[in-house]
Structures are given as structure tokens and as C-alpha cells.
Length: 127
Image (cartoon, rainbow, N blue to C red; front, side, top):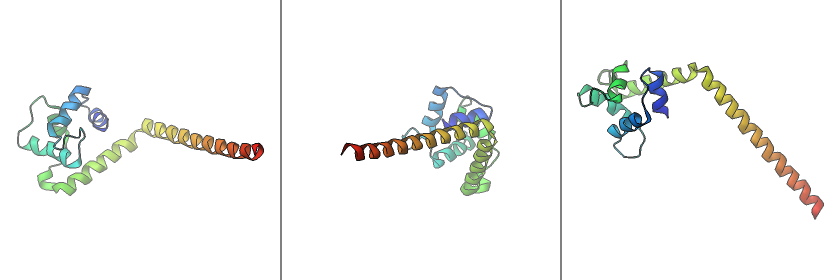
């Protein structure tokens, strides 16, 4: 889902099948997820010309604004973390959804506490 959202925000949306193929192309540990190391592998493969022209990974690599060979792994990590943070904090809609989810969690916790208090009070009367 994170890859899907990132590709959409970068202006290169992918189909579900396209996303699965992107992950499969660099998924070294076959867990169906992209680790940071596997994510960096995208840029290494792009630089080495190992990605197909119509690959979503090549599109992602071309949208990159950082050269890992110059900046190093730590520099690339900092760049992408900062970019991801900026994209997520810029989304007012995402913030509203998060606030609603937090409110629902808080209300559910309150309900659980009220039910527990009621059961405790009920048990005092039934004994």
C-alpha cells in the first residue's frame, strides 16, 4: 500500500499487478515486501541498466532526485525518509483520517472501561 501511495504521489500510478511485479523484481528475501536495502536495489539496477524500459521500477528510479553513488546509502536513506515525511505531512486528508481513527480508538477504549466498570458493579450486586 505504501508503494502504491508513493507511486501515485510521484505521478506514476501503478496497477495492483504492476506493483506486485515491481516488488517481485527486487524482493531478495521473498517476503512480498520491500526492505530499505531492496528499495535501494531499484536505483542500483536502474544505474546498471538492468530494469526494463516499461518497468514501474525504472519510472520510480527516474523520478529520483538523488544519486546513491554520490550521496551514499545513509544520504539516500535520509533523503527518502525526509521526502516521505514531507509527502505524508502535506496531505491534509490523511491527517483528517488519522484523527478520526484516533478518535474511534479512544471511544472504543472508553466503552471497554465503562463495560468493565458495569460488570464489576453488577458482580457486587449478584453476590
